[in-house]
Length: 81
Length: 81
Length: 139
Length: 139
Image (cartoon, rainbow over all chains, first blue to last red; front, side, top):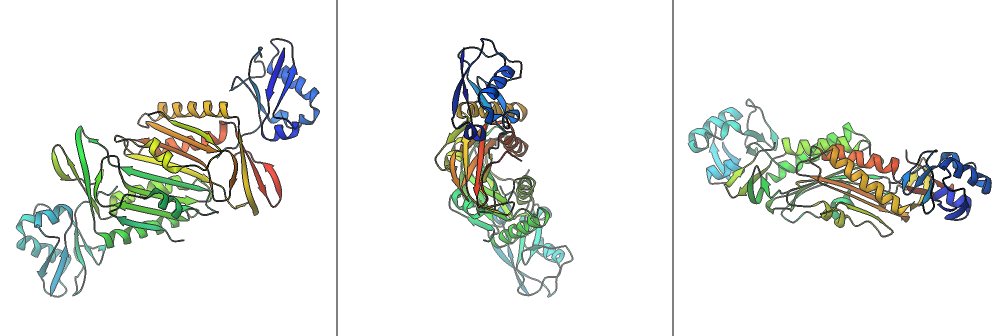
């Protein structure tokens, strides 16, 4: 499946794009997504360990499975206000 | 000496005036002022025990002496805000 | 800029309060607004009527400003605006604010400012409602 | 009336925040405004640039509104307005407010709201100053 991943803040700048697409096996976990992403975008490797992953706008665990149509986003450390 | 006394809130309404004058011996204390006031305005007697007395805009003790030209005010229980 | 201490018959201008507390070093502005409730202990209220011993109230409020800055030294500005005269239901009777570079001390400082206003400043309120009019001391 | 949750590129309108929190039963309105400081750790700042994952940020803010009202039940309204894009020194980046019939619960509720905003809501700030630009996580 093709999964769209939203990027923000430092991760967006490091990637040079606000969203990207990854090819993943259906039902791949968040952890597998991160591994695939690090392989495809090595320049994100320093920032990825600090980021949380949101699936459908909720922070997900490493083992959460991703399904077609899910909204996936990488959340680097936040700092509103 | 003639001493001007400012009245506020319930005391002002009970007295029917916002300020009054009392004749007191020079150097009379706050306590003596209250006694004289109660005698001259008996209808204030219920409210006077609840009030503080300010001399020159500071809350004074019973023994504080009043001098000519002092600004005396009766402060019933406050409730701003 | 000085602290803002004002007793006024005009409606309270929140922009004036915000601007008195604003400065490029002060990143945290905390403001309390007290408004007139339409119901008190089950009684429908028409309006409140506030009265102040203005000169003494201003001196007391300035003293509270100094106390706050001594006790919470990061707080750099304090504002007190109290309306007097008739204040209708839903309208602001008082606005109290503090500002500091960071927010931590603004919360205890403002809570203290509100408490002290109610305890020691010569301002009185008469509640006028369906059961008549009466002077209400602070709770 | 609903809670106010808004993420906007426009300057924050404090009147809108006050009006969202106002109602004749709600006598206590407490508002925090966070502004951009001109100096951070000795560095002169030009501006901050805020970015949000807007859809998720709004859902998180609405969840915080619900948490607050569950934990401090007298709090009846909550407002969060966060500016995004470039915010100049001295300008407001965020306004957060709560209102209740009486003031007691507004203080802990608002302190909690500010803390939670900084910890969990997907909004980022880039500080641009004389030493360059960098993303700043919350302290």
